Length: 257
Image (cartoon, rainbow, N blue to C red; front, top):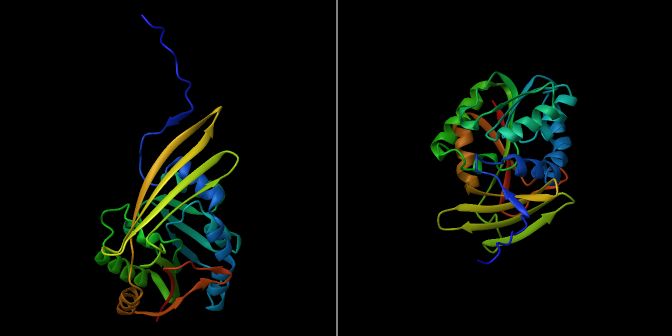
């Protein structure tokens, strides 16, 4: 009988348990947090320019708390929601004075506040099957109710054309991790699918995990109309100051009348 040869193990896999699991949350925080970090000064200036110098800010899709930390440092109260428990754990470590809950943005409890933010395509993600255009419009109305008069609602979304050419593949690596990424845009259904594979060092090996993120691409004009119907004054922006938006991307600054 032939001798059995053992094959060296070079990677281990983690079972699926929701979006932005431990490894992707860690990698996103360490390698892809510059969007929120670079946007923060412009966002703080925006709040202050509208006389919102303190009070509670609700951050939907708070991620690992990069933007929330800047709010806390500048004297605002912070209440963050994110569907990823791993992201929420990172946010709690980063912002001890903030409050963070692992919940989808559609079920967030919206307390009276001076501002609501959703930075980084939060409303596009379809992790929550209840995220329909109708439910999003209802969320806009709830946000309007929660805001004080003159309060701000600031967010950004992916639009059709988010992936020039319809498909792209790339990768990013660091000393202890690597991230492989593929994005495909379906122009007919106005959706975007991202396939992400991560490798993170664990002892002498690398742990492999993969996630599929599906996004709905929104129409800028329709969102503007929904915000106005909810009672907001609305303007769109192409950047958060020095943070320039990529193709197929728009920001919204909505103020409660």
